[in-house]
Image (cartoon, rainbow over all chains, first blue to last red; front, side):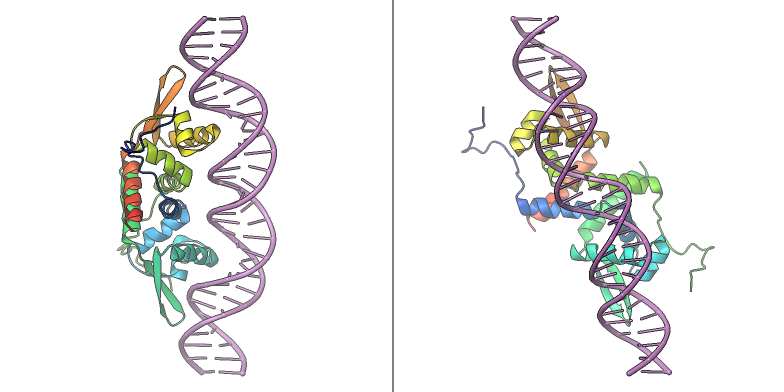
Length: 109
Length: 109
DNA sequence: CTTATATATGAGTATATACTAATATATACA
DNA sequence: TGTATATATTAGTATATACTCATATATAAG
């Protein structure tokens, strides 16, 4: 009952290796949270300081900082320092494009 | 210290309304799990019966069924019945396109 | 109506996630 | 060195998530 087409590899099974699976799921997981979406949507415009994100989106500073760390670990955002202020900005065009596409798609539904 | 550009609405804030935010986050959440990614990646090829998905991906039948319900609720998959067998297939081109794009991007990293 | 097969569902559990308050760290400046 | 400001981190908690086993439901065939 099992497939035995080893030779032809007829099944275009496109089986995902673990690393790809991990990267893909992590990427989408990053976009799967409303708070992170709002943050990334802000950073789509321009860079923002942590506190400005918090004020603009009405979130606690620690909440924003945690989510920025999350996004930073996945290299979806980066920052530059100016004195004590850290300006965060978007750092992954592919992901930002996914986000924009999906927001557009959901908006003019 | 606060912005006071009420009139001009200089900030192109593109603020996401709650519904959009919900839909977008749900969409990405659906793609944020390895099991669902594997299932959708299978269904990218062609339709599959529940048990075939379970066998192919080495998952419990109930696991597959639960995830299919999840995907069905979001209208990412649909099914047709043939006797006692349910053939599931993909039902959202936009989402499948997001998935493909991201897999490609992650693969030839 | 009984049996067999395919799938769905319910309940329990372990883990992951997101948030919060409190506190630590880092930089600037007097 | 001491104070102020911006951000990061830690620990605790509540909720969400994914999985599994057991069982229910649905269809088909005899």
